Amino acid sequence: MNFELFVSLRYLLAKRRQTFISLITIISVAGVAVGVTALIVVLAVMNGFQEDLRNRILGVTSHIVAGSFGGTTSDYRELIPQLEEVPGVVAATPFIYTQVMISSSRGVSGAIMRGIEPLSASRVIRIQENMIRGNLADLISPPEEEGKTTQPGVILGMELANNLGIRQGEWITVVSPTGRLTPMGQIPKSKLFQVVGILQSGMYEYDNTLAYVDLAVAQQFLAVGDTVTGIEVRLKDIYRAPEVAEAIRNKLGGGFWVRDWMQMNRSLFSALKLEKVVMFVILTLIVLVAAFNIVSSLIMLVMEKNRDIAILKAMGATTASIRKIFVMEGLMIGVTGTGLGLLGGFSLCALLKRYKFIELPRDIYHISTLPVKMETMDVLAIAVSAILISLVATLYPSRQAAKLDPSEALRYE
Image 1 (cartoon, rainbow, N blue to C red):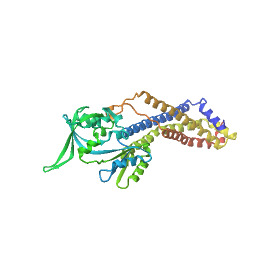
Image 2 (cartoon, rainbow, N blue to C red; image 1 turned 120 degrees about the vertical axis):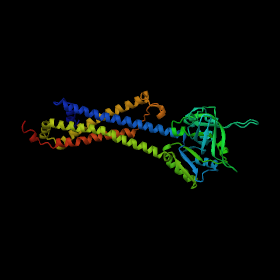
Image 3 (cartoon, rainbow, N blue to C red; image 1 turned 90 degrees about the horizontal axis):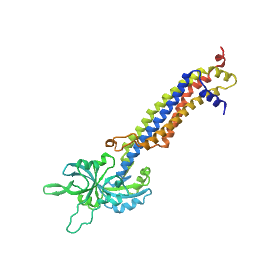
């Protein structure tokens, strides 16, 4: 153990003549610990919310969507195998997207009808995992028997079903504004569907508007022939979406547009990222308050140890050594507080994750407890920031101690 570290430990641990100085030191350690704990817990909860929101969005939407600038695509059966050959792509599925009006005996509501291929769609979007009643396979229309008419099935979002007053097994009428042209003008086209499933994604916008039907049924109902609105793609790594989207864009050529999930939800995730940065800055102020306590504690310690500093300098201690003593003491306060804060943050996050004792109203947040996710980079940033703030807080007191003149300090001793 070198000389500076030995003296700084003695000053930190030794019994003080002024108990008030020891109290300020304890408050400084506690302040740093509380600030670090608050930062870890808040950022972990925000990370948890962001991950939960991303999972809910990607539960009903694909990672990449491609479509033709012409509005519809007819050669999608040839394009899908080509897209699945692109590195990073897991699967692809076609879809039809259109606005419709849905009516029941109890209500009327606007909706977005999506025609999908149930078998291939199950490999791209997680509809089945979000269904609370029914199965995705029920969308597949059974072969028509002679003399018997079968009605196609539809899967509704939970909020949409509630608005219509509909339950599984009941019937709805879907009306398309793009109907057939007659001498009396354009007449909307309508068709009867049976509700075969209810879906709950946790996103109100989706649950309140989406209605899934079989792709072949949607093509026949809309009279668009063997065409689709676009192709949805699932990736191995969602964070490689921009570069895979670029590869798909090059594969399809200039007649197609390609958008990834980051582009489609850019404003939402940008707002969450900005909120996370703002919370980090605001909660860092707690550590800054503790830093002022470190400054005051060290200044008072320098005043108390004037005689000791003078003796050390008279015995040959250099100005740099005196400065280092008080810098080390301030750093030990900061490191101790940071360590206790990390322990407190990890413990509180573990308790939140395991026991879920903070409940949230499900009808507002669609989750019952706080989601928690700690990220290594956030923890490192918090720890480094707290220690750096503590280090900066030691600069002025250590400089004042180093400037002490031994002859002046010992003149009246």
